[in-house]
Figure 1: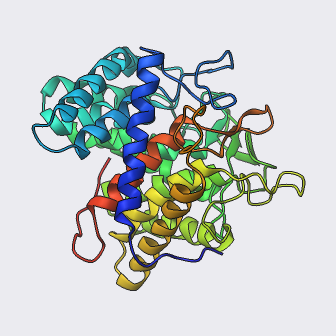
Figure 2: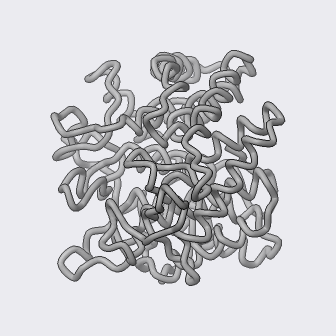
Length: 385
């Protein structure tokens, strides 16, 4: 169980963000135009598989975060804005990409942040189209957005991408889109979130009848285990659904997942890669799951009607971030190109194990920025993405 941290260490978080900026700047200078996924031996450029390029939004997404943290009218603010635009623009054709379930990852980290800064209608049009494209994955028989694996497959990861459908529905006042997003979230809640708040990675359905057949996994220990990154996706994703809908079922689900995470994680808040991992791999942690969870807790703490529990979530998020900053960054390792060590991409394929991973980098930076900018005591603003 996690031991929470009651006070924010601002200097530590600020110094870590500065380190993150240096690492990203170095990456873009050494490999211009490159969108990495995970490191091998600490190096971003390698020949490992990238598959669906689901992480391409995270590098420019960090640049948009960095732009927001710089002082107004500073040269660094303009530098990061120009870099963010440079790396976001090539993603624009993917608003029509029907082969992946990751359009939320790609566009909410980039075009959403860009649009919030400039309010250019063209940028909003891209976001809306991405949401409409994502909605085409919906399967009436089964009531879910299918994963890239196949029409019969539902991933917990998609809870992080259904937000772009909610966004498109809100911007266009399209009730059908909103209904698709809600039904997907309810199906995920019913079949992938267990009574104790743990989560399955994948659900398999009969495409002819829509009947749920079984739990499965692509990345977890077993179909009945709880893969820690998937649990973190669920915490964050159901919280986002609550922000869009104010449906108390989604807030309850996000809390159940958060409570399971906090009860079963290690004392420093950095979980094993799977909560039911085998004894041989139990010591392998996933810092990316910790970073996602920290960001989810910071968002959730401002939604809860109970201020005591909200403060507990806030304190736990600070503990996780402090652990990551002190024990898991690459500061002091001159040859390591990433920000956060100890991430896990795919343990069964031995890809990106104990390495830097792009989603871990992005959600770590996002959580640091949120922790520095907001407080559950004096700021009740909600972050809707």
